[in-house]
Length: 318
Ligand code: ASP
Image (cartoon, rainbow, N blue to C red; front, top):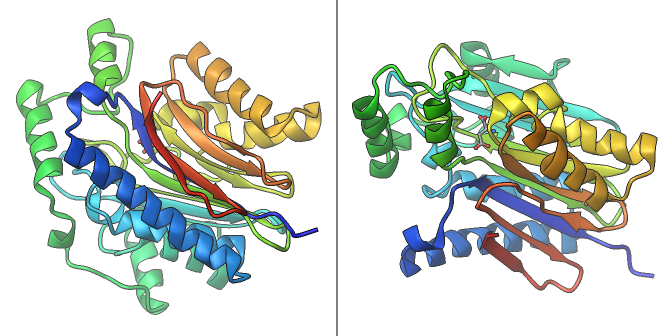
C-alpha cells in the first residue's frame, strides 16, 4: 500500500468575519494558503521529509505580508517587530526554537538551525540572531517588515488606549471584550511524510503592541508546537492561555495516555479545556495515519490541508 502523506497549515485564528472581508482580500488570503500547501505537498510527494515540508510551508507564509509572521509581523509597542518560531521532529523529539528576533527573514529556518546545529532547544534575542548569522541564515533590515496595515493597527491601539498592551489581559471585563475582538495571527504547519515521520512548525510576530519582551506560546515546545510518533500539532491563539495549558503536548498526551483519536484529543483541548479558562484560538494537527484535525473556538481560522490525492482544501470561516 502507498504510504500516506498529509500536510495541514494555519494562518492564525480570531474574529475573522466574512462581513469584514472583501472578495479580493479573501482571495489573496486563500491563494497564499494554497501556495503554501502546494509547496509543502511537492516536498512530500518528492519523498522529502515532514521537517522539510513544514519548514517550506511556513516559509511561504512568512514571506507573505498578509500573515502575522516574517514579512507580515505585527509591531511591538515601541514600533519594532519581534518574532518567535519553533519546529519539532516527531521521530526523535528533536526541537528548536527562537524568540524575540528582529532581523531574520525566515524565523522558522533559524529555529531549525537551532535544532540541527546547536546543543540547545531555544535561543532568544541578540544571541539567537548571532547564532543565525554564524550559520548563514538570511538577515534583513528592520524596514523589511514594514507593512501599512500592521503599522496602522499599532497606531489604532495607541490611540484607543496608549496603556493597553496585549499582555494586560487581566480581570477587566471591558478590556477582555476588546481583546476578544482582536484577530490573532501566526502561521503553522504539521506534516506526515512517506517514511511515517511527523513534524510541526509555528512562526509568529506575536501580538500588536506587545511590551517587555513578551513571548507567547508559538516558540514554546509543548505549548505552541509539538510532535512525537503519534501526532504533530501547531497552535494559534491567545498565547498566554496556550502556555498555561501546554496545549500542543496535551493533544499528544490525550492520545498517548487516554487512547483518544487525533480528532477527539484536538477537540478536547480547543473546544473544552481552552474555553474553560477563557482562552481563544485553534490548532492544526496530523496523526501517524494521516488523519488531520483543524479545530478552533473563534469565528474563523485561516487553514487548509492536503493529503495523498493532492486536492488542496482551504477555508477561513467557521
Ligand atoms: N499564539 C500567538 C502568540 O500568542 C499569537 C497567535 O497565534 O495569533 O504570540
